[in-house]
Image (tube, rainbow, N blue to C red):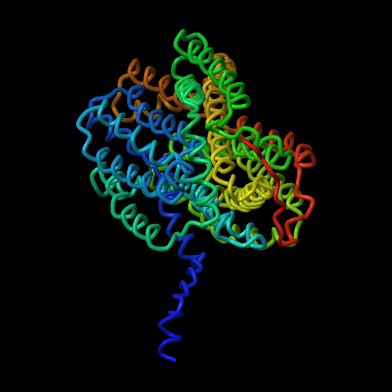
Length: 543
């Protein structure tokens, strides 16, 4: 027996690989996405403090946001390329460290160039966090729970910008402005160690990535990468700075438009003909991915525009502070946090087109309610409209994100999520640029319309002016001064009423755009197997 054992030593059986806990994985990767989403809006409320700290003008300080967004959109579509070269988990951890380092340096910035440069670094780190988290969740959750996975992802993407102004207002009001950046450091470090500990890469995906990495190294698509970066940077600069430069009246904006159009057209031609493209545009050959991604970008452009208008209305016309407006918007965030997991479960039982259709209608109704806001609008009026929007946002974002990626092979998931995130980001930027421009123009037109009715020969105007002059005279002011001040007060009233009219027009426009989008829901392609089948069909997308 001893001889037999010596001749046939026992074979060591490898321990089975532990199955990752999907909830710990979700919590781990959500830290980075949530921080990146918050930082896209948190800086806005600290602009006055930042201007004073670095000695910048109003126009110059906007570069802190522009630089961050440009860096973010440059990295998003390259997430799959970087994941194949270095590994998906390593890319996420590396970008998270870069984001944390950029945040720390932003808090130490001593002048405007340093702050813009550090925000750019922060944006480079943030760019890969959203697509990588989306891919990790899709690869971690079973097919029948993909709706739940995208609901969790949507909470980070949509809730982040919503709580950013509130959090920023609280920090700025009670601490130094640098803490809007320093707060990312401990949270980011915690997220780093949780991802390192709990996120595991599938061995089959790693083997595929290694093989693809070898092909990429032998056929590096430098031309495609350069064209992409230049084209997206020019496009994002145009969208972020166009309004302040009076759009195409500026030679700089016109040049950016030309460069962007030329580079992005050349990039698409290059990627469709390259042997191993850096960005897999062939994914758009799948009608489900193409229609879902484009529709997502279209809807997100309207959503971001409406989210941009309401805080501005409350702060500029209702006299809310940044913190007060953020708290007034909190019910929308709470509704979304409650609704998104419910929608994730509904996705298994209800056709996605039905959820999206209902979401479009409800969100449009919320925008229409906002078109009735006035200077006497209170917090209760705001809550009703934004609660409707919170329900609508949830019904839109979860099925759109899930449907778009439902037929993408697991090994191409990071490529797909990078493109999906990019179009959503660019769509949001386009919506913001259009509505910001229209707000300025509608305000000018409304001011002219209101002022045309304030003629001295009208009894109402003369009575109002006399009452104001009498009230001012009662304070001891002489007749000439009281008349001049009454005119300025009347002018201010005109400006505020004109601004209300301009906002109301834009809210009506947002509601109408949702009506226009409604028929497009029926053009949205859905997987033939249906969301409730529990199976994700596999399609071959070659590169």
